[in-house]
Amino acid sequence: MDLPRIGMILADLYVERTAMEITFWGCRGSIPTPSRLNVKYGGNTSCVEVRLSDGSLIVLDAGTGIRNLGKHLMQNPNGADIYLILTHPHWDHLMGFPFFAPAYSSRYKIHVRGGPIAKETVQKYLDHQMQPPYFPARFRSMKAQFDFTHGIPMVKQIGAAEVIPIALSHPNGGYGYKIVEGQKSFVFLTDNEIDYDHEGSLARYEYTNICRDADLLVHDAQYTDKEYEQTESWGHSTYGSALRLALQANVRRFGLFHHDPDRDDQSLDRILQACQNEIAHQKKSIYCFAAQEGTRMRI
Image 1 (spheres, rainbow, N blue to C red):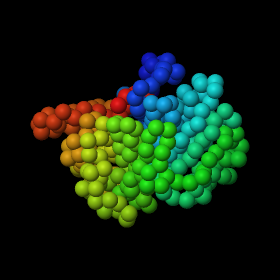
Image 2 (cartoon, rainbow, N blue to C red):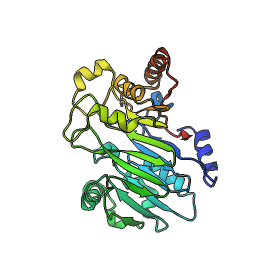
Image 3 (cartoon, one colour):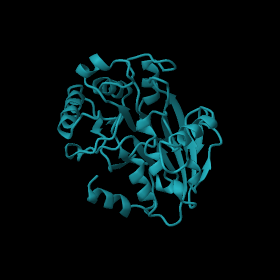
Image 4 (cartoon, rainbow, N blue to C red):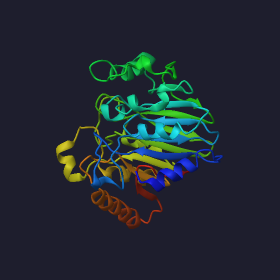
């Protein structure tokens, strides 16, 4: 992540918000990929910060991007409540949690949720990866106050927003989320293979209806069509399939996410350009982008 972008984020720490703000702290899929070839889009795995207009903080996923988010949050001397919402327990979406600085600070209360699943299951995910011999510190060494009261029912109120879990089409299941605040809506569907019927998944038309007219859709777009010939059933969509969902749902903004670990900046630029060309060809006005580490947008 470049220093000017970090400065922009830190400088905005105490600014009063009048809209939902989304900041990308990790956009990579499968495994972190620090490399000089990935400077533009970043190499950290899934973590997205959502700030509601009342200041409520939602964190989607605890991939390695959560480490930099934690450093950013520790700039606030007063601490805060954090709603950490996990999509699923695959490593790339959890591996940053032991390095999340607010978890070691008594100034924070962390409400951990994981879709409509038992609280014991969510707690087990985080505790297990910190057990010997996997990690030197234990979960019980964390000083934050943790709340594992329950999962998210069909609709959960957080601050001024409703958070709605969406079953993912992914091996071992999982949940994406639709966050609705007032007239604004953000849909986060990482690790969602919309052209393959995994157990518990929704039909494509159901995903389309959920995303209909969303202000922002961020969707898994890990593979090219050629790659998908070898990776079908692995739990991830092609960028073309994700784009078709965005077009069919008439979303306002569409973000490519969960970038393949072998995808360098130039390759992602070409994929983004292909998507933008298709949008123009269909005479649509969707703003299409590839998620970049450290960027923030308001909706």
